[in-house]
Length: 152
Image 1: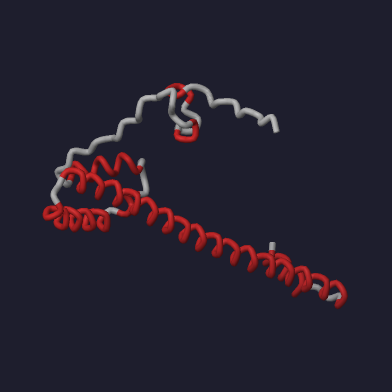
Image 2: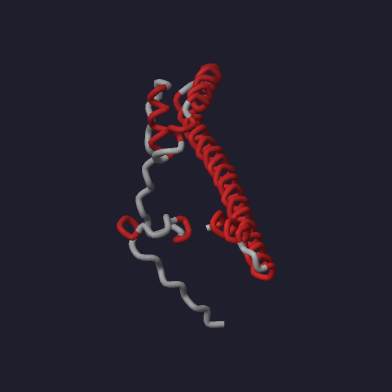
C-alpha cells in the first residue's frame, strides 16, 4: 500500500493532491516505524521476562536439590554434590523451562544419586489453625470455614 501510495504521489500532477498524498504516505510510514519499534520492544521485554522466570525456576530447583543433599549427606560430602548440581543446572537451561519444579528436583536428585522424596502433607487435625491449611484443598481438608462476625 505504501509503495502504491508513493507511486501515486510521484505520478500526480495536481500540486494540492500531491501534497495530500505525500502527507498520507508520511503518516503511513510513521505508523509502520512505530509498529516495528513496538514489536521490537515487546520482544525484548518477553526475553527479559523469560530470563527472569528461568532464574527463579533455576533457584527453586537448586534450593530443592540442596535440601535433599543436606538431608541425606554429611556436610563434608555436600560441596562435591553441590558443584555437580551447578554444572548440571548450567548445562540445561532449556530443560528447566519445561515441566514442574518438583519433577526437576526429583530428576536431578536421582542424577546425583539421592533418594528424592516428596514431603507428605500433614493429616488434618481439629486443632489446626485454618490459616495453615492449603487454600482450595477441599478434598483433604474440607470447605473453608465461614468467618464469624464480631458482636462488637
